[in-house]
Amino acid sequence: RKEVEQDPGPFNVPEGATVAFNCTYSNSASQSFFWYRQDCRKEPKLLMSVYSSGNEDGRFTAQLNRASQYISLLIRDSKLSDSATYLCVVAGGYSTLTFGKGTMLLVSP
Amino acid sequence: DVKVTQSSRYLVKRTGEKVFLECVQDMDHENMFWYRQDPGLGLRLIYFSYDVKMKEKGDIPEGYSVSREKKERFSLILESASTNQTSMYLCASSEVSGLDEQFFGPGTRLTVL
Image 1 (tube, rainbow over the protein chains, first blue to last red):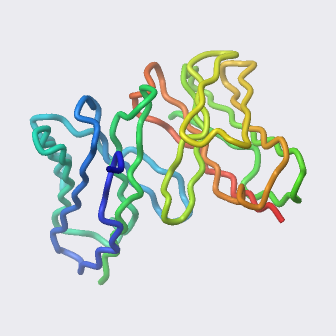
Image 2: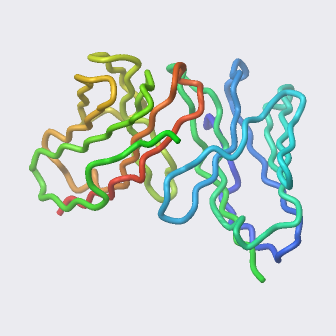
């Protein structure tokens, strides 16, 4: 089983739509979880950390289900500027982060 | 703001050449990382360093070496470049723990002919 798995997409949604991304991870001992965003031809940047209780930042909500080893990211009221690749990130081996391959989101007018 | 800079945005080298990729961070971070990113394979960790003169292998260290002589600088070395090392190389740093937020440089797109 791969360490961090994501649906590669692309997810094509219209502006204003709600879209959800899922991610599963294999290391049950992982303690740190993040969502990063990567724009086309740019470097990844932290979008938000994921906490056990779930957390929200404006239109973005992240959830963690430790029992199922599952992380989600919900984007409400999608904007054109949300078009990017979203990387699920989990504390992996060597006490470093393991990045998923990313899910591409395309928001159209 | 944390700034991570990489020496080149684009680089073209020939097979067999020795290649140096330089990375500098300006926030006194303890940890530095080198990744390569390829379509369909995502980000893969090559090497990382928790301290000056210290290095640890990541998932794909073969064909690479690194050097960290100063805290702010982490170099990736391709001893003898090969075409399968054509890729986007990303450097990152994090403050204290390898599990902290990582800040990335803009990347170097290396093409080996």
